[in-house]
Image (cartoon, rainbow, N blue to C red; front, top):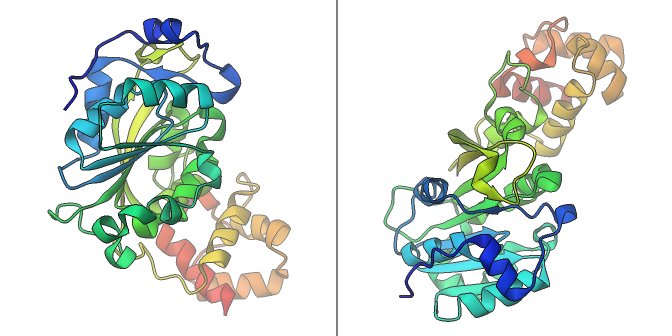
Length: 297
């Protein structure tokens, strides 16, 4: 196994004549302590397959490869892919794919490893010695939420996500009902996963230094649904409608955004045991599920 190289990001980029693109949100994580936290958050064992989103120049990739069975590094920038292929050439357990993660079907990408990692395509117990598929990512700020939602749609083959996101996004992901940060993103993440804030990360941990701080979040995919929902698409439509005008009372927000008449809304709110004068940010996932099931009928 190749020794982990502690070469400064600036030196690597200078060596290859590459400048990072601000429009692509390219900020490379280089702080040693933070890199170690990311690796620990992924809870890796020697049987795991890791999908790394946004591999950059391979600093984190090397550490992942030393602990996992296989690392599939997905990087959009062809210049960085060239650096990755040259710098990581000695690592025979790293596969580099140039692609836009928002257009990637993970089942297709991982098909060559199906026998080892995709048996049954069901979420596995994260504590089990059986091989797991885990996502590790330093997500670009400008498309963080779309990437998270894209990955969650493919949750059937993922057991864990360890993701670096903007501090504000992390606060929304882990927010509980009653918190002003609680919203549609909170519910989407917590419906699919057990979420945990692992660490706040200073902007100084990246090169080039972004304008805001970040946070490391771990998301462990639930084996079963967090709440019983009869129509998942309608459930999330209801959630989005409820937070569409979050300062309004729930009844008014749903009337404005969902297309149900007042009387029908009041009847079903009462049936679900929910006061329409409440605001959306006070409802738990279970309460949204109960209201969704009542309205969907």
